[in-house]
Length: 200
Image 1 (cartoon, helix red, strand yellow):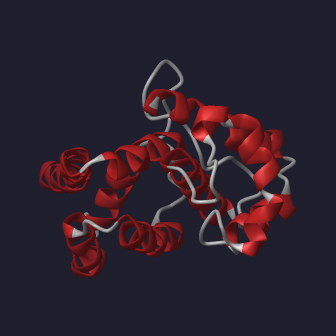
Image 2 (cartoon, rainbow, N blue to C red; image 1 turned 120 degrees about the vertical axis):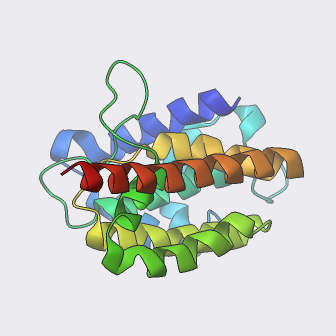
């Protein structure tokens, strides 16, 4: 299920990016609609619903875990893609075409910058302790904006983020596993950056 969501999110991102002829209206609607139930998100529903299976779609108007995960990931892609006309900011972090990196690995790269470290830790550490999914998503949107400002156009695996966001909603145990994984990516990346500086 979660692996399938990763493929779905990647497919939707590619259909929005359209080999550099990006669907600007969809990107704008995504950026301005914080949740799948937001009014502006309605413009994105056809794309979302065409790619999710019948079992993954809500039957009662309450968004499913799948809808929340995929929508949030593509929204974060839209925020990060804004203003970049030259390249797609999404790329897989695993597999034969791996050029991207995990979101928290990219954030860890920022932590390697001593000017940003305290501010980054102040945002990331409370997020890693948060059990409320809406709170996590809200904090992630702020981190995406910080990464966009300081991240040197790192390519991010937003499809993997969709998978992570799905597991975050499944159970307390799965959410704890995802938070640990994010912490490992964030702090390990920062340690690597420090090691590289020491070797210079």
